[in-house]
Length: 152
Image: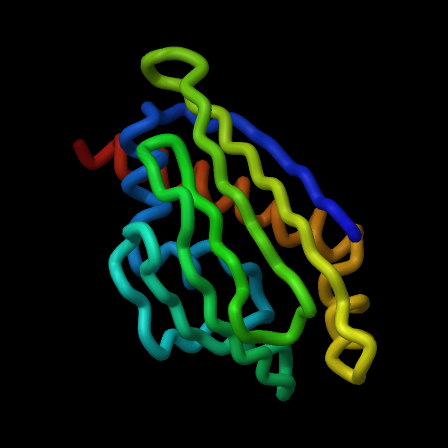
């Protein structure tokens, strides 16, 4: 089973990182272009909350339903319960380094299906594409948290 790990630090306290990720608009803000996110039903972050959305990769719709588990002040896991992958479990961990610096750790365990969607996910969630996606997420997170701390 493939595993993808990625981590980075942000100049923001743990509470700001937690609040940013709990915002129902976070998925849209963290998805790199040219992918478009269509939100259908996004429940506020809580144990068992559900998010339903479609990722449009060009004309290709990836319909997704995720359930949030292990929700705490230091992270959460979103688990795909319906979608293009056979398995997708994405754990977000927030580790305070100091009062104003937090490390964000991303851990994904996933499996591809053996049908046409498996071919699609093998391409979209290949190691280079995941590196690009999470490089973008690092940039977007740092930018958003820098803006929010500047406005306080």
